[in-house]
Length: 504
Image (tube, rainbow, N blue to C red):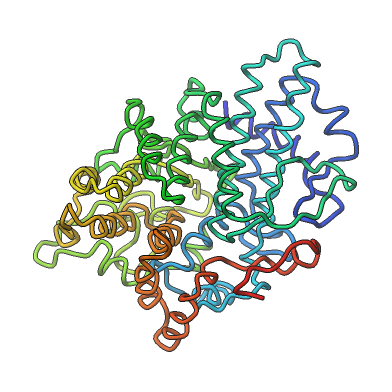
């Protein structure tokens, strides 16, 4: 049903894709369509909601992974680059772009197209459109119920919250736009809100969405590819973890773990079930691609291969048992990475040896899966001085993966920082190349007013080229450098925007 709706939604997107202004707040149908003609029936609300999901799967502007001056990357390319480029698990190839190198080498300028947030704000504006205009359909279509309206609005608010959470963690302070922009006359130039204000709005949206988000749509594809109440809970846990509200993290995680709806896929089936087939019992929310709507990872990881896994991934993250080469972490070689050459396998492999053809790049993008819930819960437990419980959760994750004893740090359960460090290492093994590593390192580093800045600096020292190591460390000692600059085009078109402090 979801795939059918996404195809139908192309018609809606033709109406709402920007056509005249270049401002990132622009969402322009032909004048009057949104308010006066479109929002009349429940089917149009359904199409509007489907349009949001379609926009999350839409390709990059101009070419498969091009960064245009205005359009920017697709959502999944942005999420991958924002979540991995500044971390320590990628290495360059002959196809790595100059803009990639600049970010990896901590030489970030506002002219770097990777900092373009346009795609994310377009998705936010599509969410705002449904939130603002769908209620009017109650008057126009008597078969459209309040329950259905509440459900659609809950979906839209959750996706809006997810987009703002990425923006807040990537840029810090960002403009908070909560009303739809549908014509040239409605375009506003607005200043930034603080990260704290954005996070508060995210929490508000999620709290409002939770009671109205569906528990199920009645079929697996929709339950994994659309927002459910469990998606809301997963995002709540993630946001509260960032905000250092650990009791609230546990509450949100427990709503998922106690539901009985999810579980860890057995280790030998993990790669195939989660990343080749998709929509597994472990999945909570994933962006679903197919042959009609391919993901854009082929040129990134296969040909010409813009990135590879660096040596650190196999040598230290997963490591190898040199006394018995049959022993391996089932998340590592031929699951996340091809051990022989560092090819990122999670999205490129079909099995242990076969690479996807370009027309088979249909791997889904995992937003949240059950392992994430367990490790977020473990992190919260550790930081609430419940280390033994936290380590019990981590053991469950490691046992599923057949993790090597060489990577078992065996922290003292009474040492909350040591347990949290172990969990950070385990997250690297579990979520390699899923767009989470940078955010994980930043979250751990900034905890308790940057008490653990050593985590960030150790990562930078490990990842930076030797001739740039000291320069990179010096830059990252400034907390403001942990957020990307606002793309220069946005500053030119919105005079109320002020560049982030490190880049002034």
